[in-house]
Image (cartoon, rainbow, N blue to C red; front, top):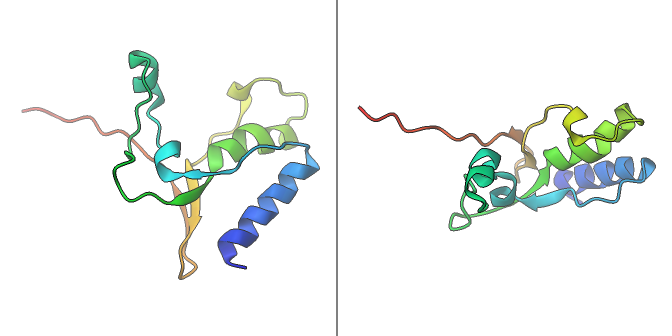
Length: 110
């Protein structure tokens, strides 16, 4: 079992303890959604587009919004009460642990 698989198993056990049956794995492209642009346009906008080489990640927003929020604040009913989180967590083949945050950088025209 890889370290990534062990971390995924640990998080699933933590979720089960709080009866949160949610998918914690996603693709990097999926966790890179630009929510502001999606809300403006009505169409889903991804920062890391699907045409690029994609990879499986642990979706830290899902962990923070659904598992950790309930564990930390059991009476919480609103996702807006969730703690801030990185977008994704990965462990490379050479066991480098990384938290990823995807940002939109506006172009500056001169």
